[in-house]
Image 1 (spheres, rainbow, N blue to C red):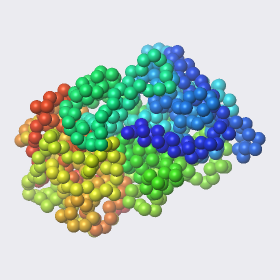
Image 2 (image 1 turned 180 degrees about the horizontal axis):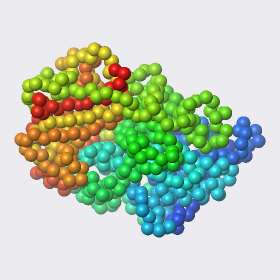
Image 3 (image 1 turned 45 degrees about the vertical axis):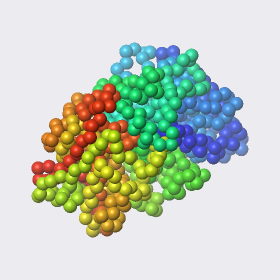
Image 4 (image 1 turned 120 degrees about the vertical axis):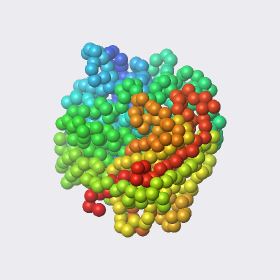
Amino acid sequence: MRWLVGFMLVTVSVVAHGQDWAAHYEKLEYRIPMRDGVKLYTAVYVPKVENASPLVDKSHPILMERTPYGCHPYGTKQVSPHFGASKQFFDNRYIIVNQDVRGRFMSEGDFEDVRPIKEHRSGPTDADEVTDTYDTIEFLVHNVPRNNGRVGIAGISYPGGYAAMAVMCTHPALKAVSPQAPTGDWWRGDDFHHNGALMLQDCVEFFSGFGAKREGGPSEEERPTASIPRGDDAYDFYLKLGPLSNVDKLYFKGKQPFWNNVAKHPNYDAFWQARSLPQHIRNVQPDVLWVGGWYDAEDQYGPLACYRAMKARPGKGSNGLVMGPWFHGCWHLSEADKKDYPAWMVDRASLFKETIEFPFFDGRLRADSLSRVGQHDWLDGTDATVFNTSDETGQSNRFPTWPPKTAPFRLYVAPNGLAMKRPVASGSFTYESDPAKPVPYYPGMLASRNTAYMLPEKMEPEEAGTVTLVAPKLDYDVTVAGPLEVDLYVKSTGTDADFIVRVGELQGSPTLLSSVRFHRSDVMRAKYRGSLTNPTPLRPGKVERVRFRLNDVFHTFKNGTRLAVRIQSSWFPLVDRNPQTFCDIYQARPQDFVKATQSILYGPETPTSITLPLLSSQ
């Protein structure tokens, strides 16, 4: 679960130096009034005055996180901030601020998931998350002791979404913002939908424990919506669950407001567009550092899409991007986490915290930062720092922008698999898609959704209901840098379908299809092929074109390996089952779920292809 992972990472970061907080910090609690009268609970950790401190100044910058997950522990005697600020911020005596967003835990008001940004306000008391950020900063700089009048904001995952909204805040004290794995768009590619397809297990299990309408005002505790009795076999549980309408009928029972909205808005309508952060990002004033992970199963889309939006509509603020070989939030791992995570992932997290994240904030929030940070040149913040997932040295790469200059490298589906030239002959690869036997997203019995499916280290067997296509051996190294473009020509016997495209490599014989390692995968719901807002049915037996984009990759495929593509129409229970009948899936009946034969076409008139962006030097 996304929120559990975030809490675990925060806990790791605090425990690493938690025993020192009470000795060096005092905790203050405020209920800060917003412009509409709602008061938000805010915990502030202020460095004590220490004559022996090596720090020259006695005024401190503020680093804030706004969160829907609670600011535990509450009470001024509980000096242990619920915030994953790395040790560098503690050592340099930053003021740390945690705030419950409106409607959550100890804050007043009504909560709304991914509350829309109001571009046009009705009056001076009209509030949203941007104005809440502004009003909070205004209070902090005038009321918190020993602050230097400069504020930074950071957050991971949902708190990263609030940080992403904060980039639109124009308060002059806000100098730096780092939205990390932000919830950029919950329909197009983050958390709960990818291209209109519901990320079933994540969505149901997250909202079973989050966001139920509270009763009785502010509280330190959260009331869960429902208990989901999935047991040890999630595949079996969700298959027996049946149509999506059973989620509310059997478990949520009308008590989960956001699930009700998900079911009411299956298409990319005004409801979702208003909640799309990339659509609102423009003319940004503070400097921004977007952070994401190449193996992030939850919010990989958000940082990339938000970075591109800010680049397209720039303001005064610098626009930086970091993408590394991490799971969700794992750029904040510490040495102690090597027992649970790969050492290379932890080592790159240390590099990020010490040489990128801290210099980014310190260079903007302290007047004397240059003398203490040294000669590190990340302070300009205008570039992209990315890690190549094939590079075992752990070194990062810097580009003036992301993606860097590339040239298209198009792989066509051809009679023998994949080819670099458009095939002359026409034909197809065909498979049967059966909603009663959906293809599992990961081999074996699993309870929780496993993030390991994002890793290319795991070899996956070819399943019934899939087609795997392999290219000839590469004669030289090929570095892919940027998004991958999918262009499918298909026929179906059904009136709707999902197409999951997975791109990877095969090391060894082209007949050993169980040895494919996948680097990027995603799903497209075919009824949205022409419009995300106005879906249309497939025409059974007719040629249809389905185009979509896979998230960015930065990987070098080595000389002698074979590029491979797998295409399938289910990915369960990661993604909900498509009935393969054109309908509102949230109202689908059992009889709507039908088998369908899917054909992937190739030929001069139906050139199915995957386009990879190669670094231009190749």
